Image 1 (cartoon, rainbow, N blue to C red):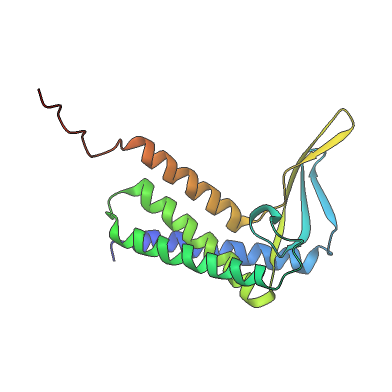
Image 2 (tube, rainbow, N blue to C red):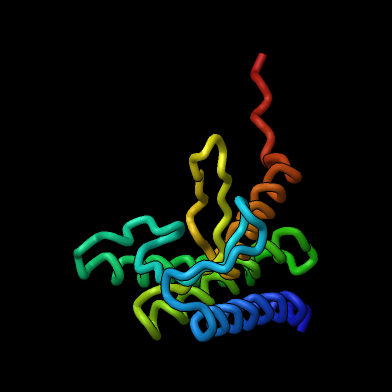
Length: 169
């Protein structure tokens, strides 16, 4: 019960991710874009068969989706075990792990249901007439990235616990 609020965070990420992907899939045609902030942000509808940020999306091998699913399941297992073994009072660590968990489950649901992940957030800048784009992503990807950032902050906050052995005179 002490972890209920962390699990609720994971559930919130999963629900928000699935709802936003369903809305985009229903109301935005494939490859269409709705400009929210000109020359900066659009809502788009793309399908990502690869890993984060479209890595491996153009691979023609049937093994790539299998590897992505196995890898995501592996990350899921590692995060669950680490979250359970870590102190429930370590808030930053637990929030980071549960954001990663919720994001991983959100994307896994898409991969198992459809064989791809719906991405819809597109940030870009137009500088000197050239467009510079960050690969499209979704709520689950955002949660994973924020969770990883929190894990790094947590590691920086807690210096190495082991001390170096004293020098022998």
